[in-house]
Length: 172
Image 1: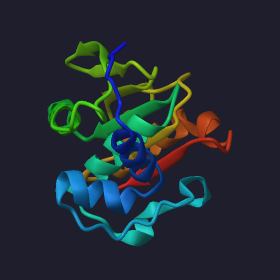
Image 2: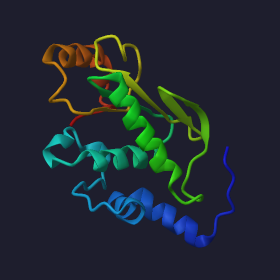
Image 3: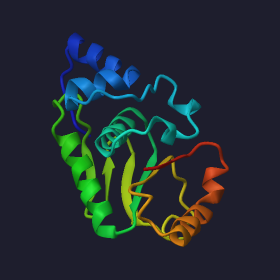
């Protein structure tokens, strides 16, 4: 676990970032966002906000930092594309100030585990890739390029998780 001597200002900033996604995105990634995530759990379909891909990469960073014990799944039509997105997300995490950065417990090409026990993995979009996993947040990047049959099989494969009411699936 990563250790840091927190100042009162660090603690206040962490609380502000946790409670205000817009502040986090603007302050640390210079992204003005349309997403208002005061109650992230109330969202059932974030597609209505039409955010850009960079915005969602920052959303994944924020979610991974301020939640615990979650599985975040990144998928795309091509494994290579998912790996590139995961690499971008890891670079965004590493670019944060030390008092915000989580520790990396495990880093592999297809996934990472943080010291808050969150995992971010990338998979291809098929019916077996996430079967049996309890997904907290799933993001299908470039869903318009994913063949309908592949996307349908993928969604059917994670249907039990989706029906638990705990998971969020976002199609970009």
